[in-house]
Amino acid sequence: MDNPAEHTQGWELLGAVPTIIYVFDVESRQNLFQNRSLGQYLGYDVPETAPVFDEWRRYTHPDDLAAYPSHFARLLALKLGEVIQWEYRLKRQDGAWLTFVNRDNLLASAWPRRIVVGVASDITEQRAAERQKDLLVGEVRHRSRNFGTVLDAIARQTRPTDPAKGLESFDRLVSRLRALNDATEAVLGSATRSARLDAVIRAAVAPLVGPALSQVTIAGSDCDLGEQRAAGVALVIHELATNALKYGALSSPGGRVELFWTVSATAGPEITLCWSEHDGPRVCPPERKGFGTRVLKSAIPGSRVALCFEPDGVRCALVFTAR
Image 1 (cartoon, helix red, strand yellow):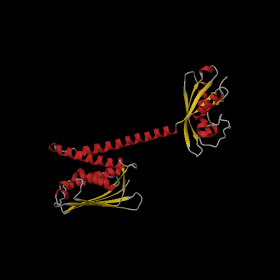
Image 2 (cartoon, helix red, strand yellow):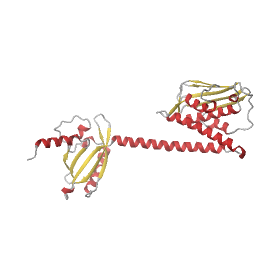
Image 3 (tube, one colour):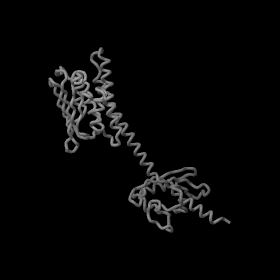
């Protein structure tokens, strides 16, 4: 005789399995076996004695329930050795929708009677992870396209008209790319894909004048920049600092730069960033506009720029939104 205790232990083991195991008679459309209550798994107060067969219908999303006949037609056409699956949503007791997948195959020992053995597994976390992966892949593609466009523009504009200045142009290209990279690093270090304005400014200036920034005063209200704004600000500050290092206040030991900004209380918010040079060589306006000037005008879409070459130093006022 069979040992009743062994049967009891077997049922307990089946009930502890973290999936729903079932045996389904396709032709009679009846469950012959199910190892645990789906309602209890979903957090509902279901009595132990409540029937478990066909209970899935009351928890299934209406759209998925309407699509079930097509899955049932596949069950009718199922062949030995073939496994088919059906994905659907079940409503948890707290109102959240969980994603389940059924995997069905015919029980060979019962053939030609169409008895299906299947498992219903909760794949909610798996689908959420896949969606997150897709978002990240899309973000990487978006970043790559944007960065590629910026690189192309910088490379074309930095190309010298005089071949003798090739090395100088190469150095400027590398310097600009470093400024972009530093701004990107500041953004990627944040879970919100944003960067502090003061961090972006310091990252753009420090490689040119040294990390101590002894000739530069930086001050302003706390403000976070979106990714594209951070890259644009980095390019603008880098161009101003490069020009000051070659021709302006930073080319003289006694020269200094004041860099400050204010943040409006309006939606956006709107930032007014000011660059002001003092105690450097006398400034002469350039005879023609170079790429540096074009960067100031176009690096931040929608911004307003005022650039003045005063005799005692360059002044630049930039107005833009944080995102």
